[in-house]
Length: 426
Image 1 (cartoon, rainbow, N blue to C red):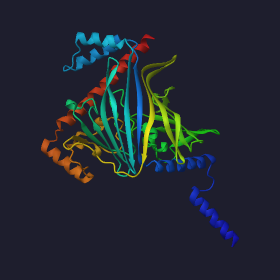
Image 2 (cartoon, one colour):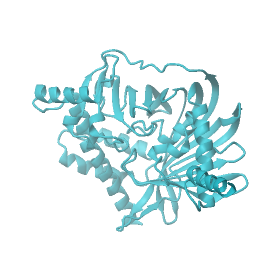
Image 3 (spheres, rainbow, N blue to C red):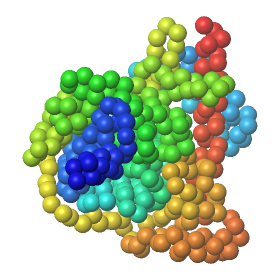
Image 4 (cartoon, rainbow, N blue to C red):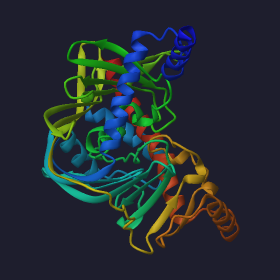
């Protein structure tokens, strides 16, 4: 009887641990995953209000004349866009200065099970040291796999500055990127704003995505790489420190962008993090820890042999003002009649901000009536739209997709010309 009991015990151990011979690293990752899952479930019902103090610094261009020359080369191919002499002088004047803007905003996060909403204001154009704040609303449904973004200035191609509603299929909370340098939310922000599990950031929920880099008495450092295509258009590396003292809650997070990609598709990442977040103060709620105050720094720059040349820096100090618990319904408070662009037929996890990859006939435009069309209904609407327009896209869709199609390549060409000139000069 005793050997039978021992055999049953071994089988049960295999069943619950995933097999014989689990390494120490695998057991630790399993412990971390369970701790973060419990933490995520605890924060799944409640609302948080954050106060954010933001400073944006745009550094002078190294050689604005060369950059302007690249812009003029665009004009030769775009007869509809001409740079006047007055505009050139204004550009050169501003390009030689350091621009600094400070503003503050309030972020309200509400979680109700699988649905999470976030209301805030993002920064618009910086003029004379002040910045225009534009209301924005994000909603993410984990069970049904869709994300929604509502507001004015969602994209630079938004016509007439009217509020729009964009709908996407997503496997992780990934609001659309914007051409504005002060766009507020990236996938890593949700880990600290909404207390989501860091293991699922940016669609990294697949098995064995994370590995342990280092483990000490106080923290465990994890690292994961995303090869692009889901949420991000380019490869991305994430590194996070989990505090053992605070139940494996993230105490810091770093996000790295590629410096270059070799011929063998090997990614060489830049030495400085594009985004760096660190917790400054902690708060304990029952038996779970969360940030009370945290800092987030976003850097845009160029990796050079002699160091790093920054062109943009954004610093945010975010503090918790209020937290409430209780189950509550997250409503879609979008005005009836709002213009909608529905990208769900274009596939899941459209590359971060790259709506231009979606075929025009798969983008459905309609007016918001308070309900989200089903996939079948959306297919029917797409067919009706194609028939009604003779396969010509809605003017709003056409304008935005044209901007993405031409604006992004032209911007990349200009940046390439500038850096080619600077490298040749050095």
